[in-house]
Length: 167
Image 1 (cartoon, rainbow, N blue to C red):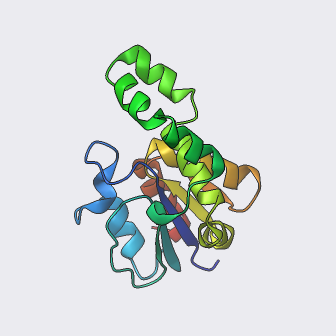
Image 2 (cartoon, rainbow, N blue to C red):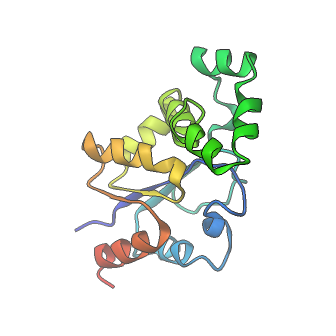
């Protein structure tokens, strides 16, 4: 079996509380992904995460992807400000999670608007959602059979990639 190509999804932006373990040098997932025999290539699809030099693969930062009509309307009428205000209470966070400004929905729309991100997902054998915002994209890629495996956090990805690599 050939080494798999991996797509890593990081949709929440670069915030320390949202699964930024991938951004640290001591990350176990980073170690597994950097093994020469482990994976063929790693494509990172993120929003606002500082680019890391990759020996095999590419880093796609979707921060500059032009917003769609829906996102432009929501931004124009103060949706982001309302989202920030609601995120200060548990009930407000619940409302945010079912609304159009949920981080997963926003990230999904960015991926849909980026031909390079869609192509990277189609090339991948395995997709890893590092944070909750990437889960919708990972689940959709798996459901549409663009990838053969999907992992929804770094710990399960380390275990799964270890099995794939035979270690």
